[in-house]
Every structure is written in C-alpha cells, then in structure tokens.
Length: 416
Image (cartoon, rainbow, N blue to C red; front, top):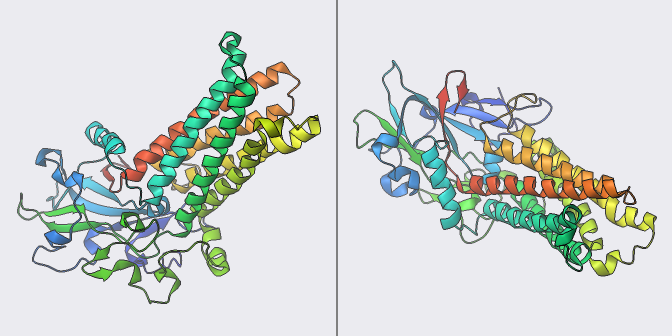
C-alpha cells in the first residue's frame, strides 16, 4: 500500500486512516519494534543522544509496562511537534517495554499545567500561536463584559463603556487574532516532511530483558531555539531534515509561502491546512469589523447600510470562517467523520473554537436587527459566551503545545 502523502515514511509498516478518503490520511499507527533504530550496545540511542525530559525522571512505580508499543502519527501532532506513544499493558504475555506514565492521569495533567507557568519556549511557533490566541481571547472576554454587562446591569455602566472601551478592545482582539492566524499558517506550511519518531529505545537499567522507551531527539523545527521554523535538531551529528535529497521539496528548511505545486498536490488535500486557511481568511475579514469598531470610525457609519456593510457583515463572514476551521480541526483528529475523538486534545480545541465561532457569527447576524433591543442583547450575550469558548480552547492549545510526548495506554477496543 502506498501513500504519496507520507513522503519518505515507511508505509508498509503502518496503518493510515482519516475521516475522508478523498483527502490525505490524518493519522497512522506503526509498531516501535519495526523502527530502524541506530544499533548500539544499548540496542538504541546512546544515553548522550537522548533528549532530557521530565517524564524520564518519574519514579519506577509510575511508569507503564507493556507487551506492545506503537507510535501514533497525527497530522495535527506533526504540525505541533508532538509524538504520541500508545502502550498496550502486559497481561499474560511477557512484558518487554517500560514507558513513561500515561499523560491523561491526574498526576501528569498537574505536571502539564505546571509547565504552562514555568516553561516559555518562545522559539516554538506552536507555543506562540497558543499564547497569542489565549491573550486575544482574554481581550475579547473584556470586550464582552463591556458590551453585555451594561445591558444586563445598567447601573454598572460607565461613560463610553460600550462605544469606547468596547470599540477599542474589539480592534485589539481582532488584531491579535489576525497575528495568531498568520503564525498558524506559517506553522501549517512548515510541517515536518520527513519521518520523525521522536522516541528512543534503550535497555532498561532497572529490569533486565526490557526495553525502555523514552523521549529522544527529533527533526521537528519546534526545538530549534535560533529561529521559529528553521531546521530541526541534529541526530547523531547529522541534519535530520536533510535525509532526503538535498534539493527535494521535503528537504527545505522553511518557507513563507508554499509553491503552487505544493498547494495542488499536498496542502489542498490536507484537512489541517484547509482549517488553518479558513481560520486566517476568517480572521482577516473579521479584522475589518474590529477596525470599523474603533470609535472615531464607527461614528462615521451614520446609515444602516454602512453599518451593515462595514461592521456587521464582516463579523458574519469572519465568524463563518471560524466555524469552518473549528469543524475541520475537529474532523482532523477523528478516525471517522462521524466518530468523535474525545481522547484527543486537538478535538476539544477544535470543538471549543467551533462554539466560539458560532457565538461571534451569531453576534454579527443579530446586528442586522440592531433596532430591536432584544436582538442587541442576544448579540452581545453571544459575544460573551463565544469569547469564553475561544479562551477555553486557547488554554487547552497552550497546554497541548508543551506536551510534546503524550503517552496513551490502550484499553480493550479503545485507548486512554
């Protein structure tokens, strides 16, 4: 079986799937045992070649022992520089692997939340995207209070709260979203084209006869502290991004814009890229509404037609772009288009952004009936709950951007 989508990847060793057959697969599973690891005395990477990670320091009783270990490649994880490991706990068979603990346990979730306040990888474009959207969502939450609270509690209103405070925060929030969407597209067109397992095998020092699986160097650009989307780290002294032919498209280090050939043959068939494109188009059109919300500009829109065309319509069109991107981001994480992926962080991010997009679109649609006080109230309320949904999704994305080596423990007919 051949998948042109997976350039330079071992297709014969994996099972690839996705929600739509007419688009590129979005995930694949492959057994770790078949991976071509460098041969050393420790049956894997030497200790000096293994990336230090907090998961390795976990005490023995919290580690996961299994009879089978599989790598899980997802297109979203590939953009984010993440490497998912699926472990089947040993039962009757002789266990041969010891891996870090599953990352959806209370202990590991608490550690992940701690990383959000102690780690600041500003060289990682995925981290920047998450933080920027979080900041933008916070601004929109302030905006929502400014435009909705005076309608709910008129006694709390201060002079210029809706027009001035609401107008300026709308412009700031829209501008931040636009900047975040640009970085999101840069992240999408600089995905890793070569195979990157991201884990290493070595003989366990604690239990003889077992192989320890732990985080290792990878070729994703996210770990490069010198620039945002440049070359990945070195593996055994060689540039992992250049294992293909030096002049091939998959060997390029980074790009501002993909070529038409790449768009036609690859990106237009990628659900993740289409989601990022919808997000950027939506954010760009939505920024028009943020710009016209500035008090000095909005005051010049003296007719209903001018307000509808320059303020409310861009909100509806931009919000619709957010809805489409939310749907696509959600579908990208699913094995089937009708089967929700509750166990994947990216699914929840897409779903919260989808709900937030509905809120922003509803606000713009109700704005066409601005002469009706009930429509004004419901529109302002839609901005309120929509902003909070965007904030929830952005915070989860922040957490996701720092969780580079998630571990799933398989349960019968499912995975944790």
